[in-house]
Image 1: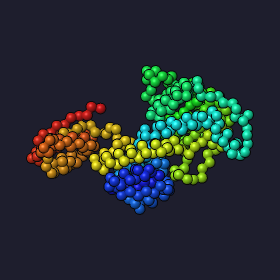
Image 2: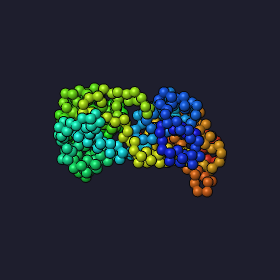
Image 3: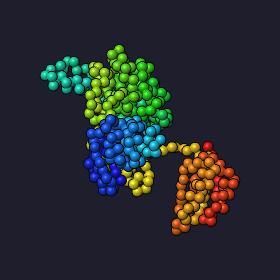
Image 4: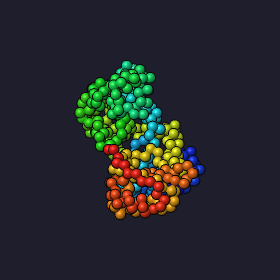
Length: 403
């Protein structure tokens, strides 16, 4: 099976893929514009990416493409709807970079508080300006607001407590009881977090609901001079509103992600918000530690191995959670060729679509049970045709799915 790796990827991962019998083509310098051509030339069954954008055009260029693996957590750089329409699985590696991102969050938080990058720049320029930097609030006893308490958020929580910080959090699934168990304050909304915190870190997925979650209203609710940290996705923050809040209310920001950031590893990029005093930016490197990348490589290997040997896709993000099936047809039959072909032919003639199929083989492999999910109820005549049309059918049972 051919695998195209369109980003930097750990050697341990490349070697392991080869040991699985894969034909591996590693092209780490590919970008969004050059990926379609590479997919057309290599024609892989599996594509592995980190930050490279995978467009609908790219997906259409890979005639044999069956699986795209994001060697990281978020999949917003992949056109998942296009992949779904083409029958291409998309999988990710959630939770493997949580510690790395949490460490960067604390680094950005310290940068905002102690202005470490500014001090380094002054010293490199040959200037000793101790008086300018001799004042800092300190983090101990301050309140950190966490918006999104998933795996990354919980790693941040652990480190915030180690710094002696209080924590207030909002998350879609967080309850007051769970907040009490974690030793943190519960907030009913992200806006409430903004009001109650001295610093806020954003850790949510990028989707239509979170686009510009941090907007003018959110920023106006933050305390004057508070710190905002964003290591999630650039679309979550309205950068124009943030720039206004920085200049008008003295906010500081630590940003690892940006609106419209490049899809490749190298490009000209100068976001206006990073030019402002009190803004500390990094290059979307939250997951870029050796530890995180090795863990992600192992997860990619696991996904590929399951796909090769069992036809399974761990961490699949575009499998329909629930199909439109209304009925399940259970066909118990002898394990002989042509039985299911006969069943499907009768269903097709009756304009009944098969949504999902599970075929369970009993011990001894002489009998099987096919559970066929249908988008409608077959007519009695169709059921009778299935029963009488093949001598290997043992029994037939039709049940309605409880919606």
